[in-house]
Image (cartoon, rainbow over all chains, first blue to last red; front, side, top):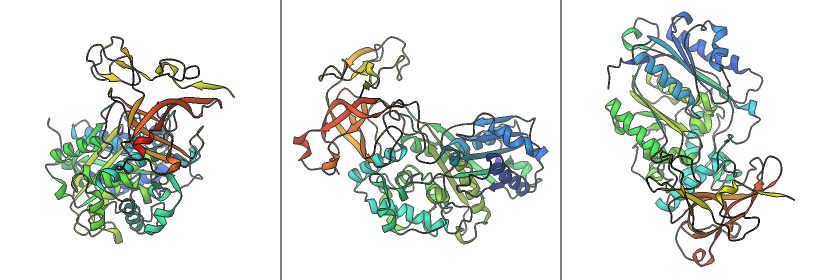
Length: 381
Length: 144
C-alpha cells in the first residue's frame, strides 16, 4: 500500500438514539459534533474537511448541519451508502488524513427515521422491492436456510436479541434499555417468519460524530487517541444466479482485507460492534468475521462467547437491535462505542482490558447483491 | 377489476391471455451467461451486443422463503416470497403458494406461473411470478 499516515480518532460524540420527532435533524446532529470537538480539544476552525453520512437526510445535509457551528467554507462531502453511510463517511475522513491531504477531519452520521412515518426501511426502484420484498424477509430467508443447512435453531438466533437487549440496559443512549427473555423474543409479533419483531432492530432518530487526526499530531491536540489499524470499504458482488445466503461473501471479503491491513486476525479482537439489524445477521457475521467456523454461529452464542466477559464481546452497546439503527448514524455510533471501550470509558458495560476493537457495518437491499456495501474498521488503544 | 402484468417484457406471451406464458431471460452473445431479467449490457462482461432471448424452464428449486406478516405498500399480508433456482442458472424472486398448509421444505421443486401478487401504486392488480410447490416433492423429506 502507498505511504499512508497512521490516523487516530481523538474525539467522539453521540446523541440519544430514540424516536424523537420533536428535535430537528440539524439540532440532533450538531450536539454530538460539538461534544466530539470538545472531547478532542479541537476548535471548529481546526477541522479541515468534513464527511457526512445519511440516507434520508437529503441534499446538502452536511452543510445544513455544519453552517451553524463554524464549519462552513471547508470541503464537505455528503455520503450515501445505505446502512454503511456513516461508516463510509468515516472511511473518507480517514483516507483524507492517511493520504496527507488533511491533518484533522470530522466524520458524522445522522438520520431521522421518524420523519418517514415508521414501518420497515423503504426499498425502491428495484425488481424485488416492486414485488413486495422487505428487508426483514431477506434476513428471514437467510435464517431459514441457515437453520436447514446447519441445524441452527430459532432459539439460538433469538439469544442474540436477548444478549443485546441485556447489554443496552447499561447504555443511557440506547433506544430500548430493557431486558427481554428468550420467550418474549420468540413469542413477540411475527414480522417475516421465522423472525418476530424482537429479532428486528427498531427505527428511530440519532446522530454520532468523531474527530480524526494524524497520530503524529494527535498528542499535541487534546483528545485521548485511539489508532485506526484498518479501514476497508467494499461493495457487493452482483450475482444473477445461485448465491449461498447463509454466507455473506461481501462481509467475508471485507473482513479478510481488514485483517490483512491491520496485520491482525480474529483471535486478536477483544470487542466488536457488528451489524445486527436482524438477529440472524449477527450470527452469520460471527462466521464471516472469523469468530467461529462457517455454520458454527449458533454454537458460539450458546457458549456465551460473545457476551460481555466472554472470549469476544459483541455489541456491548446493545447493537442495532437494542441501541437502535438510525441508518446513517449507525456506522459512526459503532465507532464511538469501540473508541470508548478502548479508552475504558464504558462503565458497567466496559470490556475489561480491551485493547483491539472492530466495527462491521453492512447494508442496502438491491436485487442480486447480498448487500450493496460493507465497511470494517479495526482500532487499537 | 383491471389487472396489469409487472414487466410484461419478461414473459413469452401475455400471462393475461396465455396460461402457458414462460419467463424469458437473455443469453449474452459474447460470454454466453444467462440472465433474468435481460439486461441492455451484460453484467458479467459488459458486452453491449443485444442478449439472445431464452425461454426459461417452468420448473425450478425453492432455495428459501419467508411469510411476510406486515403489509408492504400495495401488498396485503400475509404473503410468502422466495427465491427459486432455474436449471438455466438464474435465481428468480417470486411469491410462493402452499405455505398455509405448513412449512414448505427447502429444495422442493416448484412450478413457475404468472398470478396476482398485490397491487401497484394506482391500486391495479399486479400479475407477476408465482411458485407452486409440486405435490410429489412436498411429501418427501428433507429441508426445513
